[in-house]
Length: 313
Image (tube, rainbow, N blue to C red; front, side, top):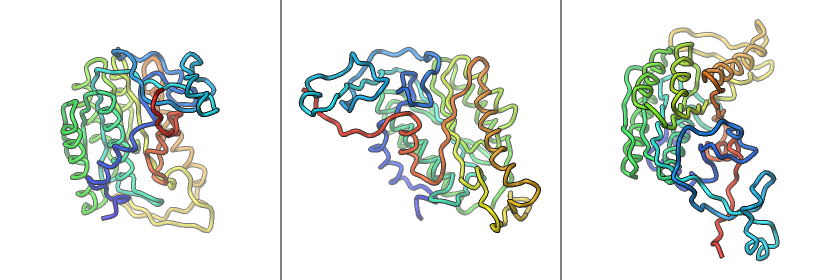
């Protein structure tokens, strides 16, 4: 099956080579959506050299590599990443409502890609990576491990659930599966964890926001909110569409009852509600769309671009 519809294990393994040029740590490029965040609650071990790349406004001038700059004729800077000894917990939504997409990929595939990229990036940074992967009726928990085998096991769990969605009938969106998974994550992530919720946010309600707020007291909480273009903006007239929530069937008409205005307003409201879930600071939300590969979106949102690796001289 096309991995843009249902991800397979091979496509998620290949993403390990795309899991660079971005970071979920508190030290961020000035253009990152995470820049300006409060200091991370997670205490690290130091800095590790990652690469040499072209200097960008906002980079620390003390990290300019003058020998590389002279050799290339352009100002070059050394890039370091913070070494970590911490658990990363992925909370991955694979309910039937995510098996939807109108452009390039389904939300299921985009969620799976985002989770795989985060897992590989965490492993590369020396983190222990675990997950709570949930569907409509149950969930699967993977305790954090700092090993390739641990990442492979949780990726296998993602693929199994995604494959089951392809054969399952549509079901109504419910908050209960999401909140059950968040409670499991809260019980697991006691202190100084990085918690990444990777979900389409359609089911989030007041209880979801409360649990995220409680977790953010003692952990770093980041939300990767996946959406389809049709959930953000409806096409103009004369377009119409037939839709179902698994229980009801209806016609989607942008010209009726202000629907063309209400859809983008509703999506923006959902994102804002999640951001406000943090009790003292806003919860960072990284909006990812199905219309593009997740890796390029994460690099763009987190303010970094792939640069050729150069050996230090």
